[in-house]
Length: 338
Image 1 (tube, rainbow, N blue to C red):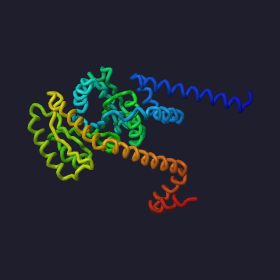
Image 2: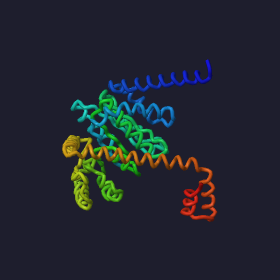
Image 3: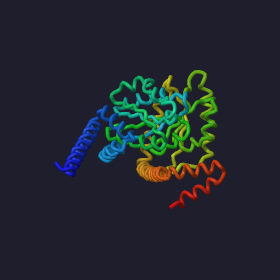
Image 4: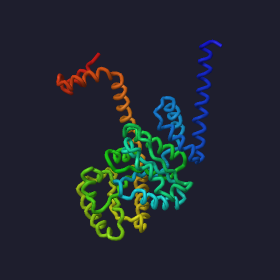
C-alpha cells in the first residue's frame, strides 16, 4: 500500500471513529443518560484540538434540541447559604416533575481548585435524585473559558431534556457578569447585617438582579433581614428601569424554616411567562449569542496575535522596563511591525 493510500485509510478510520464517538454521546444524552452528559461536558471542557473538533460536532447536533429550559443564575458571597437555598429550591422544582441541572462557575478555583466542588455533598437530597444533574464547570485559565464551557454545558443539558438550568456563581469578581450573559433570570442572595446591601450596590450587582433574597431570615435574624429588605428596595429606586420593564423583587427567605422558597419559584415562573409572551426571552437569548460570538472572536484574534508576536512582545516589555519606551509607543511599534 502506497503512503498516500495508507494516509487516506488512516484518516477514514479516524473519521469513522470520531463520528461513532459523537453519535454515541449524542444518543446517550438525548435518552437522559447522565453518564453520557458528564462525558459530553468533559469533552467540551477539553483544550485538546482533537477534542474541540468532536465537541463542535456534538454541539451542532444538540443545537436543534436546546432552548427549552428556564435558565437561572444564582449568586451570593460565600456563607450566604447558596447550597442550602438551592437544596430546598430544587426540591420544589423536581416536585413538579421537572428535571433540574445545576452548573457551578467558580473562578476562584483557578488557585484553590474550587469551593463549589463541595456543594454536591452539601446538596444531599438533590445529589441522590435521578432527575437532578450537578456539575462544577472547569475553569481553565480565564473566566472567558469558564463562560464558554458553561454556555455549551447549558445547551447539552437542554438537549438532555433538563427543564430548569441553574448556573451558580460564588459572587466575587466578574463571575456574576459572566453568568448574567447566559441566563434568563438573575437571582441574588444576600445576608443582612454584613454590609452586603451597600457592597452589592457598589459592585453593580443590583443592576443585574431580577430578584434579591435576604437569606437566613430566621430566629434573631428576622428583624435585620426585614430592615435589609427595605434598604435594598429603597436603593433600587436609584437605578434606571430595565429594558424589559421588569421591576426587581426583594424578599426575605429562610432555607431552615422553608420561608419564601416557594415564592422564589413563583416569581421566576411569573417572570418567564411574562417575558416569553412579550418576546424578550427569545430576543435576549439571540443578543447573548451574538455577544458571545463577538467576545470569542476578539479573544481568538488577540491570543493568536500574541502567540505569533511573543518574542517581539518580550523585547518591547524589556524596553518598557528599562524606561526606553512608553507602553503606548510599544503598542504602536507592535501594530506597525511588518
